[in-house]
Image (tube, rainbow, N blue to C red; front, side):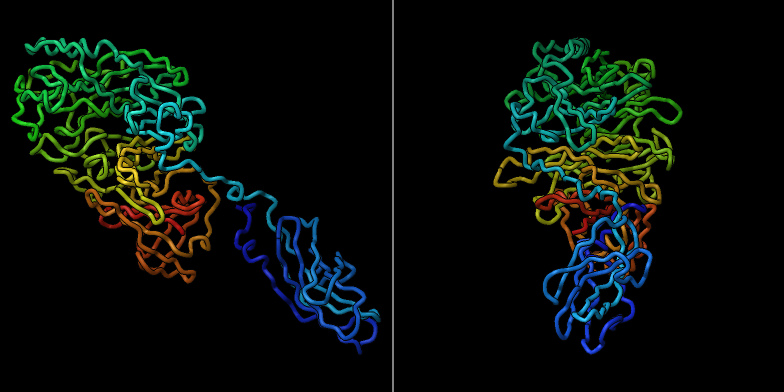
Length: 635
């Protein structure tokens, strides 16, 4: 980009290109020798520069200074002239009123008492652009990763992305809106309604807005629950214990927004008592429901509840017995939680849901209502559960309790693939994100090796617990939403948790910070997410020179419950490398691809969140030949 400031020129002061030695007397007696040094140029801007030189002479000087020109490659005192006061050694003068992005010639001169003039060698310099470099005026986010001090409800105006769990994002007007599960450090949300939400114009600075649902849940939930219990010969539950989980917000058409939400009933089936160890009655806990609200304007927060969409379904009839609390062979086959909405390229609409039980299912929707295209039926009578959805992924066929959840699906028309994101393992530490791809919503879904993703073979892993230097690092990074920005860039948002005992806090693992990262699609049609959180750093073109130096490199090799840590990678100016990767490196500036050997890495400008103070840096992400994510950050 022509007008971007030449950073390395600034760092060097100027490009000095001396020509021939002009130290000679041009007039007057030649018995008084003058020797004038080459001019050094410093403090270079678009319109000014500082010149410095020295002179040796026998006798006194009557004048010394600098002459410069943009036209004359050997400027003399008939051109632009600056005189300098002071001694002979390192005299200087400041030139102002220069033209931006212009080549100038400058040389020092000196005149002795008899009028003889000598010139130093000519130096060449180029003024900078008069365009302000956006990186010079950029300010990195300064909110703390450890937000324990402001976690309470009374401090919510200061939260920004504090207290975020299971986010979902949609754009309405000039704002992005983020909705989430009822989860917070110290249960700060309790008693203030359900499905907290916030908004942002830039995906960096977020304003907490309140909750999307009142404290009392819609009446249909309790009515539907007790109607189903009555049909199964069970007594009504007077005061159910509810959990409010994982909303999904989506724009449908030109002016309609849907919010699919999960409400879990946490009471034992047999007796209806609350789920506590003391109340255990040798039965499983009750079902979950997915409901729907609609609005035409997210800013209004005026939602019309549309009632039930689907419910947890089982092929075990009334056999809800559970031998003990260590038995994990779940009663419900499809678990009605963690919905995600997608409209496919044919215009068909789908609700994809299900977590931890037998797998993930896709339920086709009626576009007019947002509910099931066909009646879902009775969720415990028939062994055929096809009306509740088509199984599209299971981590393992032998268990009804498997650590995979939180499906999210996007479609990228440039690659013509759908991408299925899955959260794996327990959420406090080991949480990681897997990605599969397919040409169809219902599959088959394949992993990085091109084989069907059966038996839990879900790769690549695109997030994993990690730790760059100078920071505690992050764990529990998953349950994502993926969405497009205003410039068709793709983004990934999730929570991240601090490790236990961070800053001496035994409960720091409950500190959940919202993370937003940029997604990049690789040349072979997979995707990666950037290692550093998105901070809206100006997208100034990256030069080869900026890539040279020392990097922190992380390989996100799966290790349950452990953080991947950084090693050192060096990119040398001669295009060789040393440290974590090997091979010659090259830079494709147009596509922002760094190649090291045969390894291709997607590069972006982001913020070094671990630095103090935080500052812009350069990061990369890629997938190695086995589908393992590689993350890097320039130090």
